[in-house]
Amino acid sequence: MKFYIKNLTVLLSIVFLLVWTTPTLASEGVWGIATPADILVVRPLGVAATLVGTAIFIVSMPFSAPSGSISKVADEIVLKPARFTFKRPVGYFSKMEP
Image: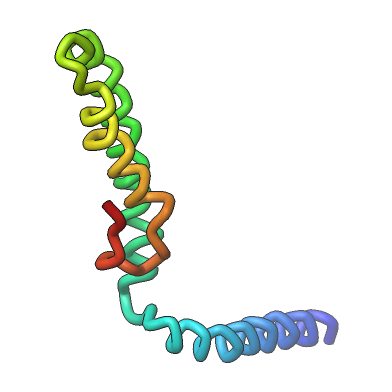
């Protein structure tokens, strides 16, 4: 009997959370596959792009320092991927800040 009560409690908790959060997500405009795809695919790729960009930036510093373009290179290959990954709301791909 305890097993059924525990399962029923878990099931009702999940249903309650889904019913409670669905209207909130609908009002925000996040729906469909955008959010799971963002969390499972795009964000990890963004972290990888940020890390690879950081490595490339470190290697390119001796070449970009004489021309005075360190900040431009850093913005393009480190900061833009980092902003895309960490500052953008989950599920939104059109709200990109420069």
